[in-house]
Amino acid sequence: MEAFAHQNPHPDSAIQKQKWFSDEFLYKFKGSWIWSTYLESTKKVVENFKPLPTDVILASFPKTGTTWLKALLHSIIFRSSEENSLIFNHPHELIPSLETKLFLESNGKDPAFTDQKVRILGTHIPYQIIGDVLNSSDCKIVYVTRNPKDTLVSLWHFIQKAKKFHEDPWTLEAAVDQFCNGVLPFGPYYDHVLAYREESLKRPWKVFFVTFEELKDDGNKQVKRLAGFLGCPFEGENAEEKIEEIVKSCGFETLSNHEVNKSSETPECFPLPYNSFFRNGKVGDHENYLKPEMIHQIDAITRQKFHASGFVYGI
Ligand code: A3P
Image 1 (cartoon, helix red, strand yellow):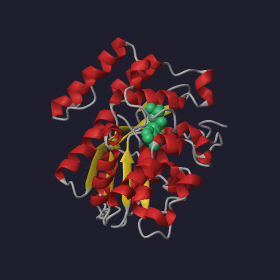
Image 2 (cartoon, rainbow, N blue to C red):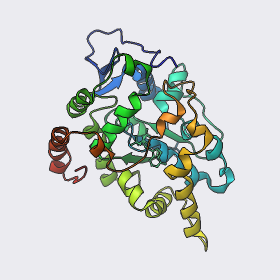
Image 3 (tube, helix red, strand yellow):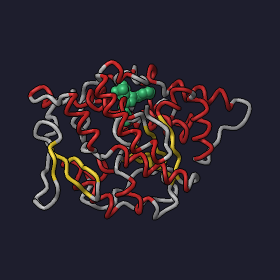
Image 4 (cartoon, rainbow, N blue to C red):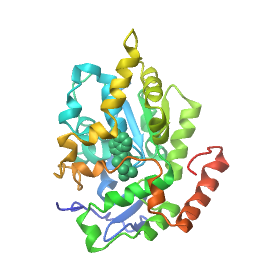
């Protein structure tokens, strides 16, 4: 695996730049930190992506449950017609992401993608950057978030899958500081979450907001809610059974055990292996890694950013 081989430092020296880990850099773009690898593709998305009114856009900060939601959305929207595809296809292959795949590969033009009636597309781009694009059509946005401490710990583990990590480790101390300062890919995390949440409060028919913890707590309820939002509710005598089946088939145990998701192969467009998207999928795992002072440091920012703005979440 040539981890992070396609780094493409931005030639414009005026642009703000910060080290992430090892020799990886982040660039400030419209107020957010974008990893050098995805800077150009992010700009291409902003300039060229034309969402269709039927599109469903899955937006998320990295490591908040994107893979899980990709599986759920695919199952809810396509139902039994493609029920086996999750067994043989990684969720990220079924549902491509704008900046990490489609626009990374394209020469800038909006890639004509799929003959499906509904296109489901992922993105980590903050609302502050992609909002106008998403508002240019009646496409729907589904946003998933996760408590900040588990998100950070998940990201830290994810990066350990990179060869570079072992040559020049990203310490947990550095990761916590960067998380708190907002200097992580697509960060600041807090701004990312709050912007999509605010839109979901203003326009609940346009933006669906759900947390990783809500999905864990009552997957059936959230799947029902999501299907209603997408305009494809479960109906008829077997409705509850169908919901139950989808929740189970997209659950961590089932999904992480498919051969395609256990694979240590690396996808064409991404530097980490397929299996890196599945670790343990638990709520509260940060307690096993973060020292009390780290928890204190993150909780202080969570109070200041989330709680002070009326979003009582994350502690
Ligand atoms: P952990 O590292 O805490 O295990 P993303 O998909 O946004 O990259 O997030 C990855 C995180 O979601 C990882 O968290 C991963 O294990 C977890 N995950 C992946 N699929 C899941 C599922 N079906 N149910 C619950 N968690 C899942």
